[in-house]
Image 1: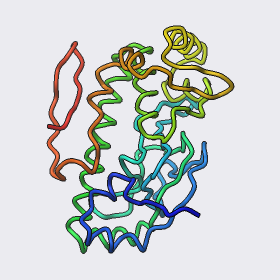
Image 2: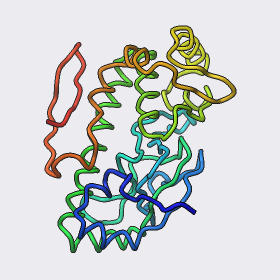
Image 3: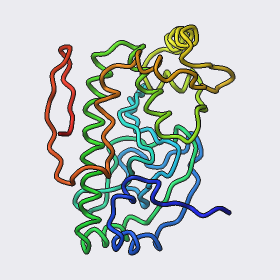
Length: 251
């Protein structure tokens, strides 16, 4: 079995050598299987996840079964963490979207390390602050931007977090995550295929022309390019006003 590079996760990579060497022996690798629920709504999780590849969708579900993605976590972030080092109640359901692997650690162990090591605590803070930024921008995007722009933004963000140019993705899955009807996704996908951005067949989406897809994406794609481990832990969120849309960004 090939050696696992824990530092392919941005949060783990942001740790100092001493903090990383302390934490690494406690990490183990687990597979992320598509559609697996990692964290249930209103239930504390026992594990913290640091994705190495693949993506996990944070989903808000309604009583009637309707749902929409409010956030996405890949190798740029982590799940099951708490700013205060206490047991975490997830803000929504965390479901594997694109299969991959993750480094995991028991939350009680991570809480102890957070209490003892300022560097680990600050990296967790930075990760969670960026996730809040992402979720706020996603909320604005879902409410105010055109479906075509949102789908292009979502596809690009997902491609950025996987190790290949092909996604395992059905139209039904994408429709649920975007919060629209499947027929709408069919029309948007057809347009993207006609302009040469993607190829879709049998539940697989292949990226053909990134520049073309980026031209279709809304400004939120650029606004959400901040990497959790790449900025100072004391993040300040500010509001930029462009095209009458409030977009949160980190300075």
